[in-house]
Image 1: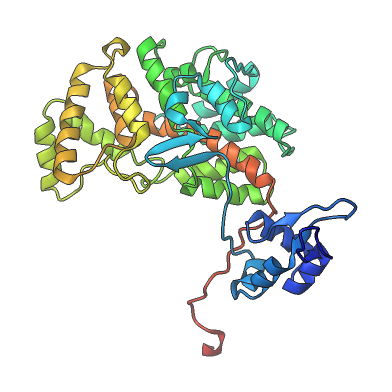
Image 2: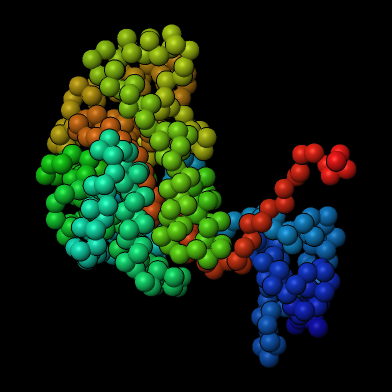
Length: 402
């Protein structure tokens, strides 16, 4: 078959035969960016440039790709570039002052609405609270969140519908219900207010609530982090939203991901009275000062920069002694080690500055990241299923040894 521009084209069946794979795998190659498909009037199915097919066929990796070696994960959700974080092409810092629900809806759909209101089922919220009440009184917030996610899922019989509209509805319900369940006040409130209730047990502080809302927005997604990759693997099996969120929660339940702010909080608590003394003690121990540097950013973490800017606003009511101590630590560490504060440092500073529960950064991280996980699940549902079966390299005892 010849295209009008002179290119020789192959049908899907012909391309599959040339590559020695199933037709379904040809489309998997398309989703991974290895092939380009074209539609022609009057021709059923896609056609492919013969030169492109031949190039792929000649690669040693072509056969290995057939058994699941993923070379590329395409996403339209988040871009990290030149020290900036973008959600769907919009600067996350500029979006951070909007209500969390509006930013969540934008990340999921691309529609930025001024008023996104989610109505929760009070009975389901209470069931979640009842289940949480059975846990150990000193359990971590992520334990409570995991339980609440599981309870909510049992009341959502249509959770197995992975269509975009259904997933967006379920995600809104999940966020609003779980956040409400963590507190004790009315469920009919914005997510940020429910989170504030959960981490303080007090009525919202206007300034603190503004910073907390920004923190949720700035934490909503960060590209293909470990938990997000886990979510995409789960979504590739066509697991429902609640299951993929559980996968993400499992991935962040570790000291190097969702719990990375814990040592920062402990350090800052000792630094409030004597920041130089706390730094000296930390350095004498041989341990690095936690909360600085990042594997992605080279000279600034825009999320931390914005949160710290807000915390310096006297109208927002952050405790001045905490901000002063944080400034001293930032100045000393940045000057001595040529580094910068990251999101963990900013979340921990916020936690100390408003007297919030110690694991507030983990709570913010887990709830906010549900937004990004949902967006990535929506993308993965449109990809070829089960595409993450990556070949392993066996290094154990060979059978002949027996």
